[in-house]
Length: 224
Image (cartoon, rainbow, N blue to C red; front, side, top):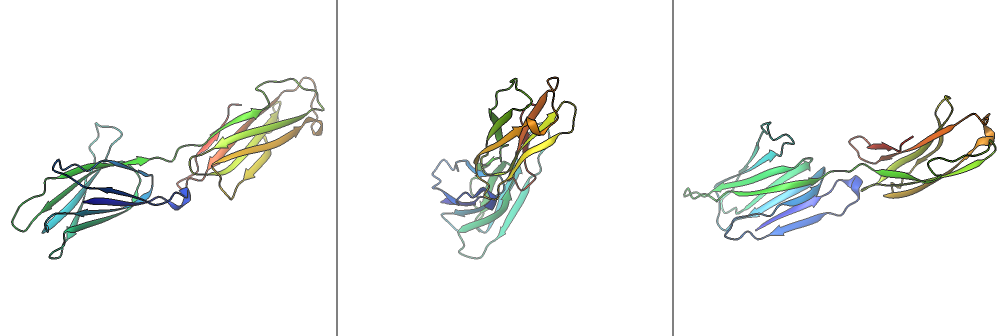
């Protein structure tokens, strides 16, 4: 029997899960997927007591032409110990795993091979709901702006920036969200009468969003 206890990173706010399998005569463990950075506790229960056992972990290289280094995790076993346990503190990339074991009489377990696949933290998305991409206005117009954004695990901040002519870029609105929702609608109003605009000026604008990825926020901007 085989099972894996999976604890996703706390920032994802996802619940722990359990993968359980019974390995039959075909000696195959099905692949399973974890969120990037998850803690994974592996346990194998064999039908007889092994004297030695090791788990071999090989990162799956993005470039198949490059050799990948295999990490070997041996176990020191007590007598009558048929349960093999490994604790992987943080799985950050896809791994090829292979379990090897040998009994005291020299009989070897047929190697069990499987993959731990990784669900990466994706970049957030956003777009302007309004205004339209281009519009003509008068110098006294108030322009309502709305941005819709989303992320797989949580948003940390959303902002809208504008620029009049060749002037400085100015933040119209910045929404830092402590609750880190997975979707957010951001509203703001650009009041042109507060600026010395003329009929020869143009106003450009864009929005940006950052997620709550602890390894360094993923930042995405709209087109200008």
